[in-house]
Each structure stands twice: as C-alpha cells, then as structure tokens.
Amino acid sequence: MAQTLRQTGLHDLHVAQGARMVPFAGWEMPVQYPMGVMAEHLHTREKAGLFDVSHMGQVLVHPQSGNLADAALALEGVIAADILSLPEGRQRYGLFTNDAGGILDDLMFANRGDHYLLVVNAACADQDIAILQAVPGVEITAVTDRGLLALQGPLAVEVLSRLVPEVAEMRFMDSRALTWNHAELWISRSGYTGEDGFEISIPDALLVEFAQALLSCAEVALIGLGARDSLRLEAGMPLYGHDMDATVSPAAAGLGWAVSKARRTGGSREGGFPGASVVLPELATGAETVRRGLRPQGRAPIREGVEIFALPEGGTPIGSVSSGGFGPSIGGPVAMARIPAEIEEGATLYAELRGKRLPVTVTPLPFITPSYKR
Amino acid sequence: MKYTAEHEWLRAEGDEIVVGITKHASEQLGDVVFIELPEEGREVEANEEIVVIESVKAASDITAPVAGVITTVNGDLADNPGDVNEDPMKAWFFRMKPASMDALEEFMDEAAYAELIG
Image 1 (tube, chains in turn blue, green):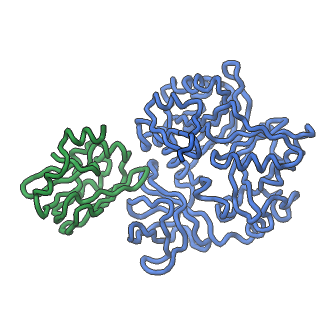
Image 2 (tube, rainbow over the protein chains, first blue to last red):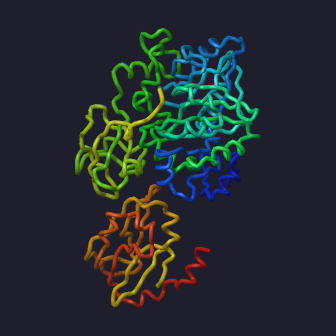
C-alpha cells in the first residue's frame, strides 16, 4: 500500500527549481537539481550549498523542575554523552544506545539556556520521541512548526552574515537564537559536509522567504540529498542506518569519542545509559571491528553491501562496505567499512565487485580536510 | 538509427552495429563516473549484461541488444566516462558483429522511442 509522503515547507520551491523528488524516510525530498550531483557537490566545497533538511526531527526538552541540570541528568539516562557539562550556547554530538550497546540514533543537542534543542534523524524521530517521553522529569515538545536549512561551504558565513550579521562571531558548534525579519532563527555553526557552515531552524511562515533570500545571493545554490551523501562520505561522517545501527556499538562505529570522559569508566558520571555495561569495557579494550576508510585502487566505486576480503582469492569476508560511492572532490571512489581493528592503515584489502576482487587501500578518515571554524 | 527499450541506440555500419545509450538514459543515470567495457572478441547472447555504468548514484548495466561478437570497445570512454553525459549520441560503448543484421529490424525507430520516453 502506498504511504503518503510528508512534504517540507519548501516542496513547491524544490519542484519549481527542477528538483528530482524521491521518497526518503517518509518524506518527499529533493535528491538532485538540474545541476547534477557532481556539480552540486563541488559547488558546496567551493562556495555555499543550501540544503533543505526540514525532514529531520527537532525536539525541545524542558526540565519540569525549572533546573536545566535536572534535564541534563535525566537525558544522560538515555543518551551516551556528557550533557551536564555542555555550556549555554553550545552544541554537542551524542548517541542514543540500546541495552545491547548498539546505537539507536545519533543526534545533535544544544544548550539553549533553560532547555535543550535536539536534532535527530528523520527515520528515527518517532522512536526517539517515544524514548524521550519516557524520561522522568522532562517535558518533551516535538517542533512541528519549523523547517530546517543547512548552509554549507567556505562562503556560507559571508552569505549568512548579510542576513544575520551576528553569525560571523559564532564558533564551530555554537548555538544561538538570532532574529531575521522579526522571526527567531535557531542557528548552530555545524553541518554534515566537512565544510564550515550553519544549520538554521526557521518558523514555517518565513521558511520560503528566508530560503529565497539566501538563493538570491550569487554564491548559493540548492543542493540535494545525493550530494549531501557524497559530501558527508568524503568527510568521513557516518550515516545512521548504514555506518551504524542498533547492532553496532559506539566503538565499532568509530564514535567512541562521542561517549565523553565523564560517562566512561572512572568518569564522574560513569555509565547510566542503556548498554553501558557493554559499551564501556569495549571503549577501554577497543572493538573487534572498527569503521575505516577504504580507497579503491581502481576507478570502480564500491557501494554499500560489497564484501571485503583479506586475500585476492578465497577466504571468507572480513567485513562489508557500509557506505561507498564516488567522491567528486577526491576525483575517485571512496568507501567506509567495518573491518577487524588490527588491520593497519595503508594495508591492501580486496572488495568483491561483480565476482572480481578489486584491491582497496585502508585509508585514514576523513578523505578530505574539514574546514570548521574553531 | 534504432532504439531498444533499455534506452540503447544502435547504428548499423556495414556488417557491424555501434551501440551507445540515449540522452534520456544518460539524464536518468546522472553523472557517469566509471564504465566497465566487455573484452573485444567476446561472444555474447542477446540481453546479456556486458557493460557496467557507474554513476555518482548507482551502478547499472547495459546489455547486448542482439547475439554476436564484440569487435571493438571504446577505450576512450573508460578514461573519460563523463563523455556519456556530455554527448551520449557520440559516446559509443562498443561495436559488435551480430549473428544476423535482420535482428535490428525488431527495434524501435526514433518516433517510437520518442513515444516510449514520453
């Protein structure tokens, strides 16, 4: 049975701009515009790309007591991150975990003074909200009257400053409420491309107008989900449901760093999140398999599901590609896979593609040098 | 010029046919980044998958339109896969000698293909 797809507030704009719309996590989203994925990717790396990410879940978490520390401690019961120490006006990355130590979702959370703003994956939003609603002592509000845009690229700050001058002073992972056209924008200096940039939450009533204002700048082009995926892949950023899922632990996903010191063994608030008894020992000893970069030595892209072998023939697979494709800025294929931890960078492995074993080099992540403004 | 339902164009030249993909197919594929061509001299069946085209988005195959022998492949295309997007009618993939040239008759002409892609 056909499911009704949700549309973002920019749907008509996407269609008018010639976007190819596809179903994505229950939403009808633009995968590419007439410029094409390759050009959109390179435009973002050179100038500024505008992404509609309104499908992502935005959730407010208020403490019932009025004391933000109570909300932080309560959230730490479901999120394997240090939430309590996050200062006002700052944002951090974290993971929802399950009892087996797998990852249920990844998220961004920002301290907005008297509450937290969480941004979660579209496909996981319902699950995450259900988890949060069961957390004692907090009031959960799913934000349903705002869109979310990402402006990414080396010229993002210059462009956005024309509309909202205060953004020029923001550092990487700062989070601010700023005004544009009498509307309150929630802006963080962050993104998912490896470039400097901003993520901007805008009331629905002004979403189109704000997007048009950005698009009227010569440096800005609309960028679809296709290039968003190749940009984040080159930046070595994991994608939920691909590079991590409920069966993959933080250490195996290469996200052990997201479980901050305070929550680790010997930390001031050790454990206390689902699966901590599995996650923490593994962070100390290291996971058996870890997420690593792979560069195919030939030109054929290797994509998700392609099996990785230690030998040019025979043997059993030692891992499989979790995300892979062509990296337009690299000018060649790139991939990520979970492989045994003991395999060193620079080693040659073999990807079995269409019955042939193709050599790939184990490569440090990210594939490109990120340019965040710290 | 003839067209297959798999969006290939076929051009008869003497006792050979030259095979490429249509503009419509190249637009649907998006940016082509890698092409794997068959070996010259290979004997192929009709509908056998013999070329792999990788675009930024996904891999797809093209098939031998008829049974026959691959006589020449366009090696330039392996080095410049983007030519398929630039000028798909010029960027041929392979030449083949069909078992019978009559087999070409069953394919669409330009008008029928235009109707197919709407």
